[in-house]
Length: 493
Image (cartoon, rainbow, N blue to C red; front, top):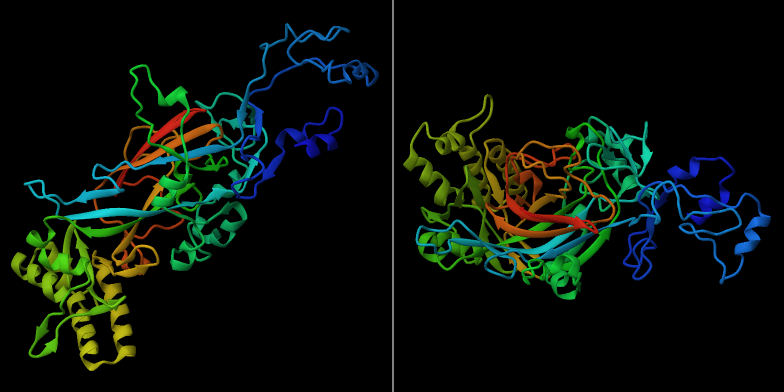
């Protein structure tokens, strides 16, 4: 900013719109410990010496110029036009996090029996920041539509929009057509240049294990919000995760989309519960990698694969029900429900000019029996495409270098700034990151398995143009935003 001001000339105003491009590092210039960048919250009008010679009166350490007091020599700021102080705010925001699970260790019940015994559990093992903005205005700008047209320095946020340096880019109607440009505007883009998510793209995210976040981070000990009058500490378990710069979306509200909003991706792992072996034994063997492929007439009658020496089937989700193995459970239940039932129809009715999902699966089994790997891969791809088109979600096991092998999936949380309390309807400035806010996050509930790690296995994959808020809820996130400002967001998937 000093460099910008040094270049400014008398009566020039360009410096008011000066921007700064950050380097994302723990010691970044704007949030380094004990040297946090502060900026004016509002315009503060002050009198200054009229000549260079007059500045000589304030040239020593013992006689500094006072922006809020009487400097004598005809320059009195003690009775200025606004206040006797200058409001400043942090130029960055902060994310805090805590374990919000009832079971502890970031583990959640999923599908309890009436006896309240666990059927299966989900443990969150990693979290990644995505779409961290690269640039911000030194001075906060607000306007009626989130663009620079008619913007003012400072000003109230409510009833207005905080202006982002990339507002014009974010107004593109089809972000997927601009996916290759995302790295120009954000660190850790959610999507690759084709607008898709794959393992290579996930490796570019700002990735942490939850153990590292919770055990290696700085505790939040700010008494202004951690010690309410009743003496309790509702936020005492939060740790300071990381800092971020402003990322806001202009009007209209539908511009709040996955390709540009700052978010957090959680990686989950499926675990057996205390009641899984009793209520769903095949699921228990699948989770533990001890699944036995079904046999028919002395031949294998299903598709399985090996990860780290363990045997896994594909797990299917259809209309919130879990099925292990196609011939083992999907077709067995389809026969039980009978023709006309949603499961039977999805599995056995062929699309016009094509094959049914069941026919595609039996072709896969035939390729496995022939031990023809090329044919098997082609049959698997055809089956997966047909299954997802029919509404099945497929989960295939994989290995994690810290969390071994198993079924992994992903939950997406888009940072909520101003909650309008209207599910599936986005309001102004509902999603975004605004300077001088602390966002306190906790995942409090998980309702279902997340998005598959293999995008082609997902019948409803997210895209850059997916709205930040949809009707399908995977988990609940508590997010409180209070001053600094701090905002507590409880996340529920």
